[in-house]
Length: 479
Image 1 (cartoon, one colour):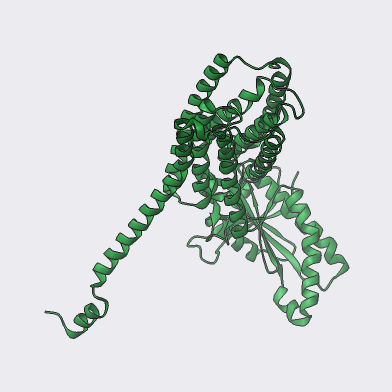
Image 2: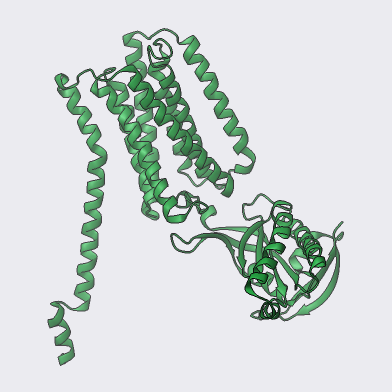
């Protein structure tokens, strides 16, 4: 038996809450299916148009000029090169193998397109065989790199191979350019060219399709505009490989694969620009593409906290402008010493406090020693500044080492690359327990420093929020 309240709710909406939830879910599924169908139709439209041109040769008219081809392809090559640089820098910042291999794919594509533009007949040079095969060969290498990037490349040491691999890629492009412009100086026969382009087209189709399928699965796990753009680009490039094999030179069917390249890399460029607008220029624009271990990986790290003891009382005595000037004077002195000097990363500023992390990229096995040196350097630089302003408060430092999650935290548009775990909490508590001018370290950090470090035991102290007491040490000096 239902009461008046229940009947009123049903009557007011026409359905029970359960049915409304079911209806909302059904509508969401319908909308998602409609978007996917529209997406698939948009991606297949260029291939359908190409088939139409082949089926109706009268429509496949000769069009365009050699200078038009040169400037179009050269512009796409330049834009692709810029994307390669952005991806390479993102890979360097986070040591992410997926982003690194994608950057190499863009670099190879930019090089092959640039060479294809340079050897445009009757613009800078005469026609040669390289004009026909530069792009498909470059795209096959790019497709292979894209396929490699679709895997979880946890064991790849980007810090070790990035510079060497980039230089090797550029050198290989230079060698191929010499071969293309010097050795392949005569056009291929029609039969040889058709057979070669068909073989390259099939190989490229298979590789791009496989890479697209794997990135599609990645997009299903974490939907994002950037991943959708990459999937779209891979599908369009697969279609371009088909069209390269069957198109007639300088006809509409030939120009369509050029347009597909422009569209493929244009889609990725637009997605990157959109992410830049959402995330900001200094944020992780390629965050949605990162490997799992980059987005949220477990690493051994050291965390340093420092703040000014007596900051609150000092702020009460002086004007906000004087507080601001004091903080800038301190941070201008200590940040270069602890960040650039010891390779620490400034995680965040919190008023008068600073949090620094070490080994967040996994490339600092001596992170505890770096953090300890940074702590002592911070106190030296702060003492130098404070000597000229004796009434300013002094820094206290806490350092702790251990396992933590390193990755992206927060919603889109406000994400930060940070460290999360008990090691952070303990470092903060150690800093709070230190006296002005001191560097206090935890047990794990002291053990990592070895017997050469001069420390003074502070015994076991109870830290706020910790069930068990923690053994702490005052760091005096290092060898």
